[in-house]
Image 1: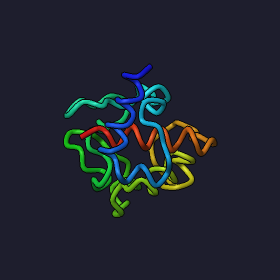
Image 2 (image 1 turned 90 degrees about the horizontal axis):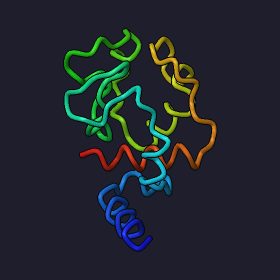
Image 3 (image 1 turned 180 degrees about the vertical axis):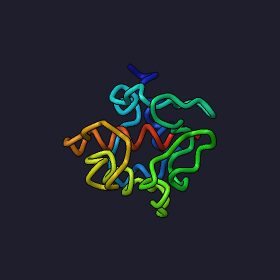
Amino acid sequence: MLRRIVLVAVLVSLAPSARALDGNPVAGEGIFHNCHSAEIGVNKVGPSLWNIVGRQPAAVPDYAYSDSMKKNNAPWTATALDAYIADPRGDVHGVKMYFKGLADAKERADVVAYLSTLR
């Protein structure tokens, strides 16, 4: 239990942009779906999400993004990821992502906190 608390504290300290959403990166990893990889350069159904926070959308080489995602110019901040994860097709109309979204704000915050640790 103590190891988990220490791990959470370390991960949260590495993810200042996720702290604004009060997410738990350990819980977020458990929610994270395997449509995306957390590894550098490994794309699955979706592109690798390694170093996603602060990155420009549609920036992973060798991934076939939708035209809508290519036109999305705002970097992936914690707030932008939260909005996208809540309703991907509503946030960026015309994306290929089939995931309906996470309605629960706490689960989204946890996922964003987890994504913020992928550096």
